[in-house]
Image (cartoon, rainbow, N blue to C red; front, top):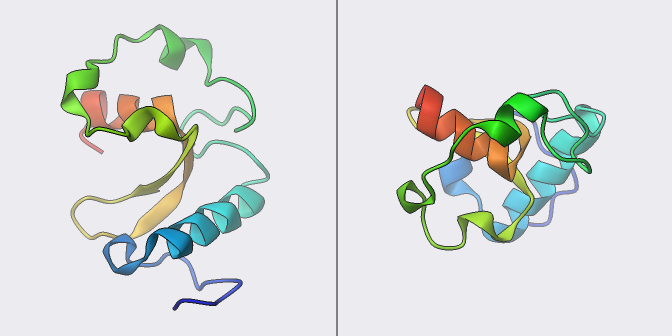
Length: 99
């Protein structure tokens, strides 16, 4: 897949190199019109208040999890990508919804 400008979505996250993940994330951002797939707020703004106010146990997440403001969400069962989300929405999905 390396070198592609666009991908047939969804793709298997586990097969992507970091550069490819970035390109797929950017493709989702464009497809989603810069909206978080979880909270529907613009990705260049903070998540919605309900998500911002939820307590996050950051010890549940790997080192570096908070380094990037926008994450590429993928299903942890199938490995398939689902969309672009705020980093905090990703944490909320994982901690409170097992996603």
